[in-house]
Image 1 (cartoon, rainbow, N blue to C red):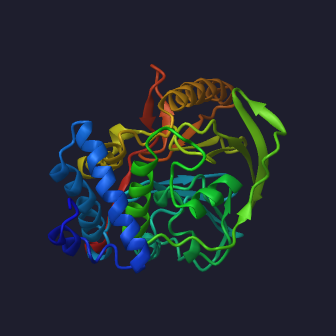
Image 2: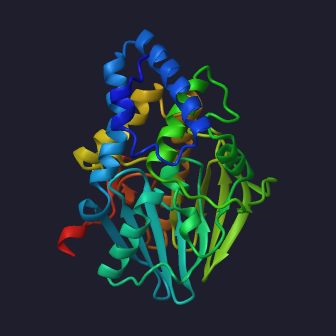
Amino acid sequence: MMLDTGFLKRIAPYIEPLTKEELAEYIAEGEESVRIREAEGVSPAEYLQLVENIGLYLGKTTGAGFDSHYQKIPLRNDKTLLVIQLPGGGNMNVFLTSEGKMILDTGYGCYFNDCERMLRSVGAGDFSDVKFVVCTHGDADHCGAAGHFPVLPVMHPVTKALLEDGSRGYASPNGREILEKFYTTTINTYSRMNVPATVRFCKTEPIGKRGLFSVIDTFAFADMRFEVWASLGGHIAGQVFLYEPDEGLLFTSDALLNFATLTKERADYSSIADSMIGSVNVNSETARIERRELMRIAKELDSELKLTGRRLLICCGHGAVSILDENGMLSPYSEPLYYAAGSS
């Protein structure tokens, strides 16, 4: 048995929420995942250390160890976009408006209280006035705290089906279903995913096009109106992108990342999923097509906005909010500020 008693004892605090039946299934899937990755050159010891490292990292970056880099971006009509780079996982985007807050991607469930303490520390109140929550896709670092907010989150119907299925590989057969399932159970459980049983669905029928992407819905909040674009499913099924033309904001979810702006610790943590599964994208070729198309569209939108004296702000799933530099590469829009729980 590769998931031996010593290993199971070390990860016991992280898998506590699993029922006896779920634990038995988790162990069986873990055993098979170890065998699959060993045949691909990852030793059992290395693989199991990756699994344990998820729990160790989340544990040390929650509570007193929580820190983040963040950008406060002024918008029209006294609104502010607060983009928080969480210590593990993707960004939480918080719109501060006179009509309350909008959250675009929630971060892990285990970071919810830390994020609320951070908001208070930086003078942004708390989450009690959140009026609208959008989850761009079903990975735990983008929807895992959705159940903590006072409103039902909005997501693509496929995202909800994926969450109910329990595998980020749902609807995307790629021959790595066991690896996808074991990783999903690991990250969802360790990060204390909390998604409500009832959610709100975005529409799915195309109403327009943005390049290769279908525009499937629009969301309105405060004086903003977001276009919802359906991804091609390269990273994960059900992923959506959002564009707000008046503010010039493009939210690319995990199809575009500014990896260069991550700290080494966050970059190392982000690499665990790739090492466990083989690729964090369920279809790598489709993901490459998405990245190229998003960059192409971004250049077009940026050129249009420049005519009005503005720039397109590319809000990546991970890393700093960016603009395109003279070489067409992602460059931080502003210098991120730093927050640490211990110094607040």
